[in-house]
Image 1 (spheres, rainbow, N blue to C red):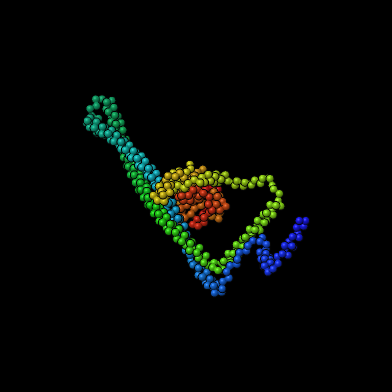
Image 2: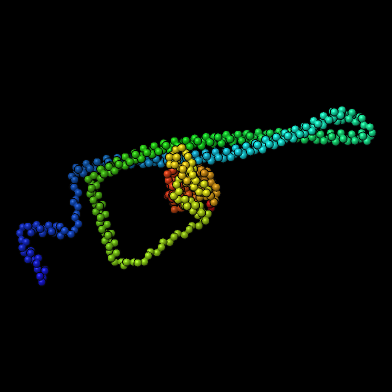
Length: 448
């Protein structure tokens, strides 16, 4: 066919009649079938239906607000219980440290008591030796029928020379024994002083032993309290989580009802806006890809931030960061690195902390600051181990603490609102945003 454009006119001439008009109208309405299908409009409710829907929505909205408030209170109580458990566990740590200190003091006092007893025994031996010497002198004097200072001691001399020799001998012997008597009196005084020192040392030793026993009892009581608190917390947490799930389901149902009839049109309008935005974005990306040449080069590497000043602070941070991912173990960690955790008879045991090699919160601080200062394994004592600075002045390398009157957690501040911590059983050493709920008003600074 030389000219294909004439064919439609002949075909159109054959399509005459009432059906042609209907077909053309449909073609015009459908736009030739190329446009996307428009969803049907939502139902148009009557005024009474809208009024009833609004009333139902207001009622459901009030219920949603009530349930949301209940949920917030439940979550707040859950946080309080977790903080209480941390306090109890840290009290057990404190009691263990106090117990070790008391036992060390008792050992020192016992050594002092033994030394004092040895000195007292030595003084007693000296007294006994002097007494024996005096007894021999007195016995010998009586056997010779003479007494120091008596005239009979000089009788029987055969010549003046013999008389003079006897007088000199008796004078020397009497002077020596008089000195012995004086030494005996001094030895007795020394013995009394040594005995008093021994008794005092023994008294101190008994006091230290009693303190150690009380510390041991306090440690056991604190551990049992921690166990009970953990068990109670676990049960309450389970109930709260179940309640939270129920409240959320009711909240979702209430929100669906609140949307009502008016919400249908609102959801559709939102969908339509999103759809148009996605189409516009696809068109923009297509235009950019078609207009921009393909690049075969590589991106410039991102510059690494320069290391902050303060080598000592950075060494502390580096030691802490080197332990990222190490498991939490209650009672674990020392200056050399992670250690095996200890039993608590409760939740820590259920997590198997006593079989894990890791850190707890204060143990991680001991390792981080090992090259700066030796820290006790109790966050309450660590809080007082350095200079206090207000939180508004805290900087990288400071220790942050949490507690409501009693310290129960510690972390190392990294700057930019971040910290590294060993949070709790079942977790690992990690970086977290600083939590300001329950935080102590001061940070502790050991460097600078």
